[in-house]
Amino acid sequence: MINLCQSEELGLSCFGCCGNSYKGKKRILRDIRKNTLEWKNKKSTPKFMKRSLNLHDSGVCFNVIYKDEKFYCPGHPEINSGRDFRNLDKDCERQFECKTHFIFNKWDKEKQEKFIEFIKSKKLDSYAYSIKMDNGSLMKDFEKKK
Image 1 (spheres, rainbow, N blue to C red):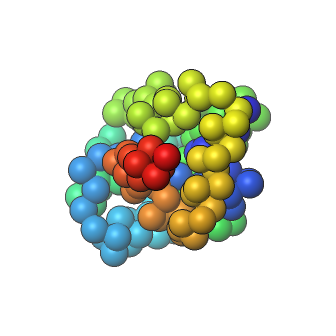
Image 2 (spheres, rainbow, N blue to C red):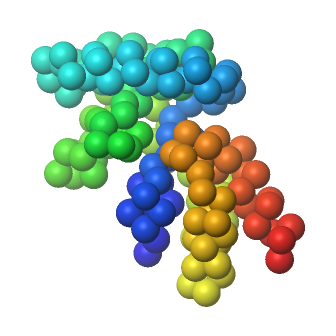
C-alpha cells in the first residue's frame, strides 16, 4: 500500500491534515520552525504534545515539526514504535483522512500509480504538496487531465 502522507517514492511528506484554514506559506513555515525548536528542547514527548491544545494563527498544529527534510507529528505512532501520543492533544483529529487520501485508497493499483506519476511531474516541495493534498486540487487536476 502506498502511503501518501510520508511517501518515500515521492520524497514528500504532508502536514495537510494537521490544521485547517491555513494562512500563508511564510506564517505556516515560521510556526513549524517554532515547533521544531521547541521539539529539540523537549523534556519528553508527552510534555511536548500537551503544551498547547490550539492551532497557531497560521492554521497549523502546534505539534507539526520539520526534521530530516520531512514534516511530521512527533506524537504519531509510526515515530514511537506504535505508541500514540496524539491523544494527549485533545484537538488532534487522529482519525481524519483527507478526501484525496480517502479516494486514492479506493482506486486500483494502476490508477494509483498514474496519480503518483502525475504528482512526480508537478515537481512539488512538501509545503505545496501538503496544501494541494489538503485542498484537493491535486486530485482535481489529475481527474481533469484524464
